[in-house]
Length: 299
Image 1 (tube, one colour):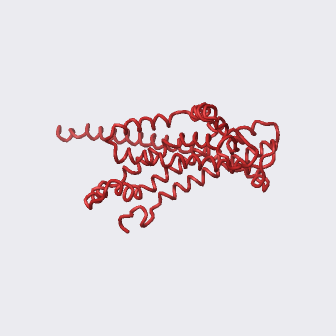
Image 2 (image 1 turned 30 degrees about the vertical axis):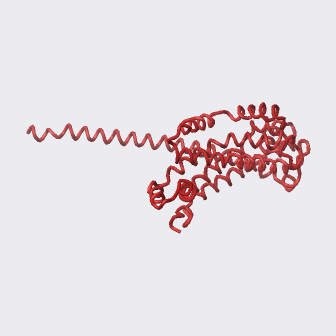
Image 3 (image 1 turned 60 degrees about the vertical axis):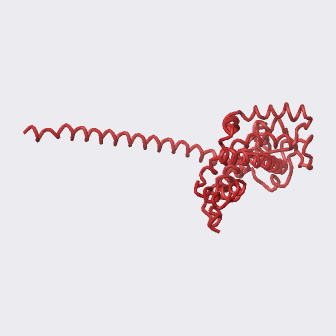
């Protein structure tokens, strides 16, 4: 009789455990679903407002004419955004990739912890502080004035840690067996890194580069201190010539009491969102497996 009743407490404990686990699972999944709906709903709402208002503000004049006061078009701002973003990328991509290679492949040096720490700190520095630093050092001290060069350097400083850390993580994902095989065949460090590791990690590296480009397209504060604003197209001077950009049009024109200024702000927001979406899609496409690219050693 006692032996028959002995398993009952264990059965009840197991039943309570399953019930508790079911309730916790339900709560966890429910909270995750609510968070996803809130985040997704906010993103869809923002995109819907930007696209609807920006689409109604679009016209041929917006794309083909420069800004004239609080009217005209955004040709100068579109051109300036592309010039500044790619200028910052040209400056930051080689340095970020070199730092990522050093951290991933030669991390036994004394500089590796310092570089990694500085990159992590630089990610958290507000962009307006970087803009103020570039204003003091480049615009004022070096006499560059508001210019493409000063704005590109500011964007490069912002982009540098992202490219550095994503390059490091991408290179660390390369199988160690590939390095060992290359060394066994007599390859030098430069050949192993540039011929094996970098091509293998190229999708991850390009993803970091595109992420930095998207961040540059959406920056405003550092460019106010370094690039200022211009209603004219860029004449090719790197210094002592301000330049227009889309985020300034959003920031400045949305508060003006003119319908034409609001239309330009909505159109500028539409173009910025479009550029960021295209860059994000490109970064996703880069991660797609391509035969003969991610595995160059099989050629």
